[in-house]
Structures are given as structure tokens and as C-alpha cells.
Image 1 (cartoon, rainbow, N blue to C red):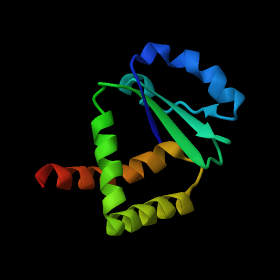
Image 2 (cartoon, one colour):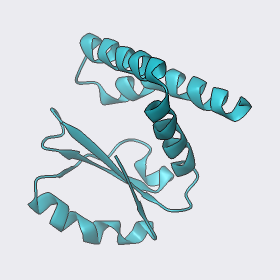
Image 3 (cartoon, one colour):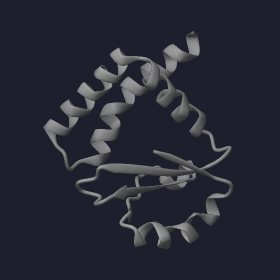
Image 4 (cartoon, rainbow, N blue to C red):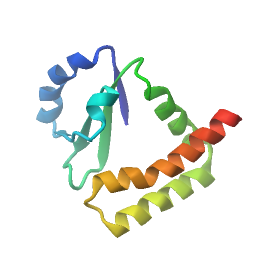
Amino acid sequence: MLALVDRYELCPALFPALVEVGWQLAPEPADEADRRWSLCYPDVAYRTHHLHVIEYGSVGWPALLAFRDHLRRDAADVAAYAAVKRQLAAVDDTDRVRYRAGKAPFIRSVLDRLARD
């Protein structure tokens, strides 16, 4: 999930309300550089939801929306992406950095294809 905020610096003020309803901060290696915050629900280790809070106008958010919108339209890529995610989780479901790195080539290939179309 993606939430856009006007100013990244205002994010910490949002967190007490999110933590109160069960979200947990889950910083990822590139969060600060990408001007985003990551939160998980109900637990970082076994999450059912992952929320990225990102500054409107930052470099990465249009690509995130383009990828999401593409998956909403393309059942074959949804299935392929799910297979990649399942395969990565089956190998090691505790290494978040490896998991993200493992998904990146698939995401990049979809975004490259969208840029050509």
C-alpha cells in the first residue's frame, strides 16, 4: 500500500496514531534516501499489510503507481509476480533485503515494458 504525504518531515507525527491501531515501524535500507517510511501490520515478521508512506513529488512514487495499475490490468503478470514472491519467501522468509532484491528484476522488467509501450 502507498500513502502520499506533502512533506516527509511530517511523517513522524503520524506514527503514534498508526502504532495505536497496530501498525509497526519497519524501516528498510533505502527509506531515508527515498524519502519514505515503511510500516507493517500486524507484525514486521509476519505481516499481512505493508504500508509505504512516501513524499509526494519524490522520485519513486510514480513508478510504484504505474506498477500497481499494471497489475490491476494484467492477470498474467499478477500470477508471475506472485510466483516470484512465493519462490523468494520459500527460500528464506526472514531476509527482507534479499526478498526485495529478488523482486526487483521482475518489477524493473514490467516498468521497462511499460515505458516502451
